[in-house]
Amino acid sequence: MKKLIIIALIGLLALSICAGAFYFYVGIGKDISPNGADWSDFGGFYGGVVGPILSFISIILLVYTINQQSEANEHTSDETTKLDMLRNMSGSEQEVESWLKTELASSQGNKEVQLGLIVWGVVKPSYVNQQELGACLERLLKLTNSK
Image (cartoon, rainbow, N blue to C red; front, side, top):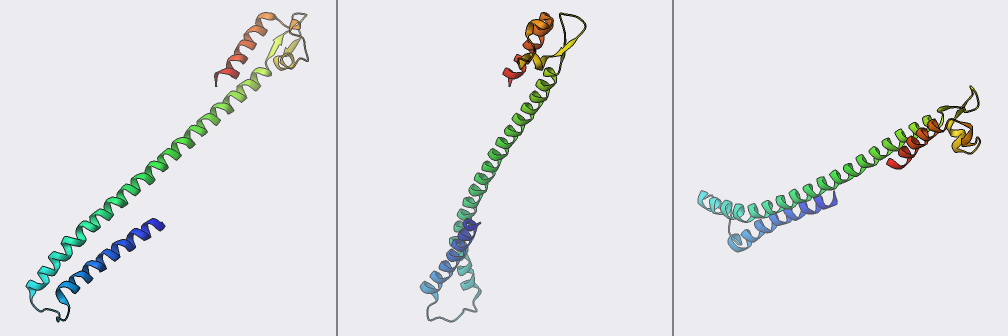
């Protein structure tokens, strides 16, 4: 915002300098002219000097706006990437939790044991069906290493 104020002040200063320069070189000691041709000359001078200055200031403001928009787009892109990563991590975490609660058939009867108890070392792996355990551990490994 400060940059915009500075640029606006520079523009007003340029306008004032142009008007002052014209008055200094052409109008010192002279009354305001009632002649339309004199006013036409003044308007031509004023427009010829101030127009390019204001155009240059407009270009500077346009470049500044484009830079600001580019920075905002980069920030938005970074935030979107972060949110996507958090969403993926959250989904993976929920799936890992559900896999750890999966019941595996025991190799010694009709009992079932949660996969989490085997992973945490509470129950020995030999206590459950080895094929089921292998499939569950393979899926769990893919979940923890894929993201």
